[in-house]
Amino acid sequence: MHSVKLSYLLRGIKALVLSGLFAISSAYADAPNTLRIGYQKSSSILTLLKADGSFEKQLAAKGVDVKWVEFPAGPQLLEGLNVGSIDFGYVGEAPPIFAQAAGASFIYVGYQTPAPKAEAILVPKDSAIKKVGDLRGKKIALNKGSNVHYLLLRCLRKMA
Image (tube, rainbow, N blue to C red):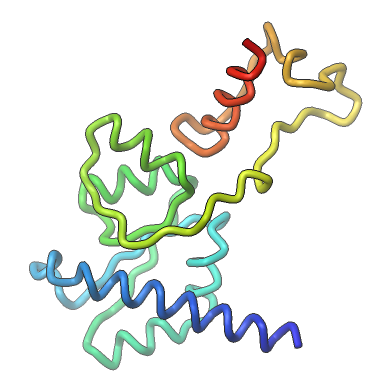
């Protein structure tokens, strides 16, 4: 049963990605033979699509090669999109807001509902930090312009 559900999920993902990619393909007429897709290991949608391999086969039948370009996180992926090193990518809900505020230019071809419970503020198991207020005066590591950056800002705003 699990593999059947995964099969349907992969088909749905392929349909969504293909429809978005073909909708923007005319914008990349100068490099029609290679589609450069930016992905993050934490992005299950594109990671599953890449691992499946059938996406490349479908595009190869149309004369298009696929090049997968890995990025550590959404902000870096969007910078790659902004400077033209990739043609398409998938990121969380916050990085595009930070990127566009910084002047990046790109278009949205699809979206998925946010999953705010998929992120967390982590501390060591024996830490004295038990609530957000305990972070006051501490150093915090995060990926600037990411969903976790936004999560921290929202938590700190609730404290104020």
